Length: 126
Image (cartoon, rainbow, N blue to C red):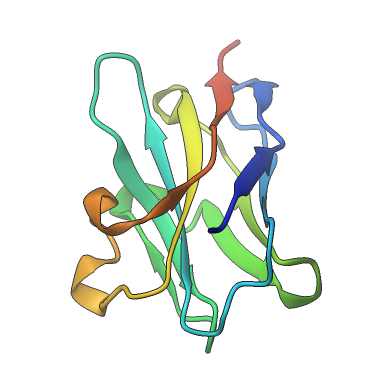
């Protein structure tokens, strides 16, 4: 069982930056994929970004490419999401997710992730 804890959410003005962190309770094996999803009010939870623990390959949803960067810190069992040039449409609850058996074709599928954090609110508003 892996417990995930997010931190770093908050209120930021349009164009600003935030850094989200996700810490795993146990050392994740090299086969794990860590992902970030978000859910805005009245909308479904959607894929934002993911990273392979082994190899570090990264994947992004089109609307965040060039603005968001996902990275990992092996020594801390941590995954970060650096969010720059934030827009009002980025407002959502952001969730960290993890799974140990994901194939490339399933990385963007929220139903394929077994472990989830509690979520952290990100609000972009002037």
